[in-house]
Amino acid sequence: MLRKIKLFLKKYQSFLIYFLVGLIVTFANILSYSIYRLINNNYLLNVVLAWITSLIVAFLLNKILVFKTKKVNILKEFKNFTLVRLITLGVEVFLMYLLVDLLNIHDLISKLLVTTIIFLLNYFCSKIFVFKNHS
Image (cartoon, rainbow, N blue to C red; front, side):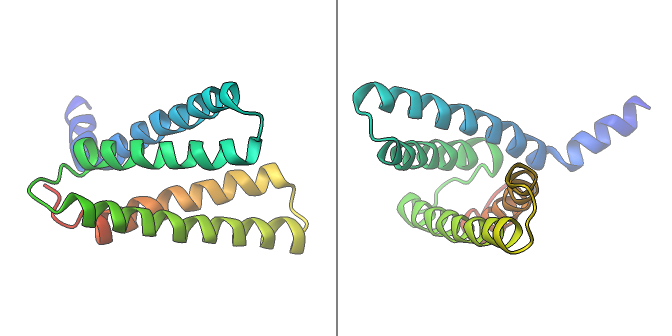
């Protein structure tokens, strides 16, 4: 049984680390939003600033801990990472509109479903298009 657990952990190691990094990035997003709130009271600006902050945290943690890329043009990786995240942001907004406004599904249920889809989409797009030379 222990051997099966070890094999499972080894097989899905990068995905499990990606999940943990996602939790850290979520915390960074909420924390940075809270800090920006102390500076100004424009919640929309704070959301954007927190998104940018968490984008940078996500990029660095994914590069170092999840995909472990080295000797690669970091600016090109960051540009691709940002592009992927902007595209999946658009997909998220579209899916939320589709589920909530057109299909009349409760927004929190829709958000849970869409977040799962975006999480997987971000992982596979990062693996295939951003951090291609991962170890």
